[in-house]
Amino acid sequence: MNKLLIVDDEILVQVGIKSLLSQTTLQIQVCGTARNGQIALEMIEEHSPDIVITDIKMPVMDGLELARICQERYGSAGPVFIILTSYEDFQMAKKALTYQVSDYLIKLELTPELLQESITRALSHLHREEENDTGRGNASYLFYDKFFISLLHNLFESEEQFTLQSQDLKLDFCYAGYVCCYGEIISAQADALPRQNQLSLFASSLQMIRELVPKYMPCYALSLDMQHFALIFCYETLPGASAADHRCAYFDKINDILTHVSATLQKYYSVSLQCGVGNLVDSPFAVSDSYQYSRQAYQASSPAQPITFFELLDNAGAHNSFNISLFKGDLCKAFEEYDSEILLRTIDAICELFSAHPQYYVQALDAACNILYLSISTLSGGESVVSEIYKTSPTGYRSLYRQTNVEQIVGWLSNFGERMSAYFEEKRKDYKNHIVIHVKKHINDHIREHLSLNEVAATFGISPNYLSQLFGKYNDTGFNEYVNSCKINESKKLLSEGNYKVYEIADMLGFESAFYFSKVFKKMEGVTPTEYQNTQYI
Image: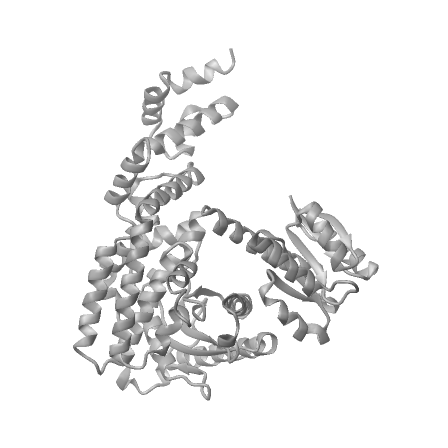
């Protein structure tokens, strides 16, 4: 059970938070209360709470100082903080961006529902940190960004692969329409901040975007890099009968949503949004078109016109974006298999293409951005990986956005390829074993489902032959043998319970028939399922 510490110099507030917690469905243990940060620090040492809810203003040591010390002392291994503020304290609260703060709550607005939502977000943040620290974690979480990058760039090999991956990630694509938005979080002060402060600022801003937008309509959000993001707005119904009606409806609604979100970000974090919005499409397989047009619209945006719609532009330059799907096979293989040779060959081909057309600046920048986003989203811990290989550059990988002509972009891309290639050489062997580990976890998590080599490979976005080769090299048994072994182990548990017949267990575990189940069981255990079940009651 997760532990929570309450820190506030007012006894009534401590009692009030406990009362609100009792009205939620959370399984949280309050491990203590403290009236100031100094006492709280001692209790954190003693009890190691997962979450700390703290007021800002307190005697001896305030909440911000407490959060700062914990961040310096424990890093990401320390507790996640939820800050309690009053309206007049919010500017002060913004200083806590770098201190493992997951949320801010206004005391006078606090309700059981708001508290439950906030603690749930804190636990989610905590679990993500644990996954990042251990290199393990849920395979669905690791492949979420990769799925959306594939969707935005039309990288799925088939409709079946898309369906299997979306189902595995529990993503709904049964909407009537979709509109993509490509955006940037604009901050005048970010460049003057230390890198960790920048990361916290932009991560907190994106988290607020993720939380605010779905309050108005269904939406999927994807971080492309530290400052850029993509949104996929989902329409449950399409108003009106004509295309003009559709455009009018989505112009107004999306413009209102983005305007409101930008104003809220300005109020809380002193950042704003600059966005391009693509066209309305009626199928998830056309989302990539809307995304490409959203990037084109973004190129036409400006501080004076921060939200720009593609369909309101002069379409003479409608195809200025770069279609990365032309290189999708090689790029996906390079990033999936850490293949430096394929990566360098592909980047060289792209560089050669643009070197021959120096007038295509917008397309060259778009190509470089897409490859950058693909690396960040496809690689595990991609943001950290790319930042690390650019740690000697003053502005990191964001130096890309400072390139002013095609020659400079080609130079940046070539350098990116060389740096990433060196990283691939270090990680290639570990990655292959890593894939097998996550596939095995997926098999165990879905053991009561039908698990074929083709379906599991499609879920992970790799070819069946490649997955079979990986299992042969990095596991004691092949893929089918491993699946059968896991299913038979699960069947033994069910047989021991005595509540199911053999044919029912065969069906529950996804075997094609009770006969085949019995055949596999006897081959592995030396007895039939019925004989095994009978021995459990002797």
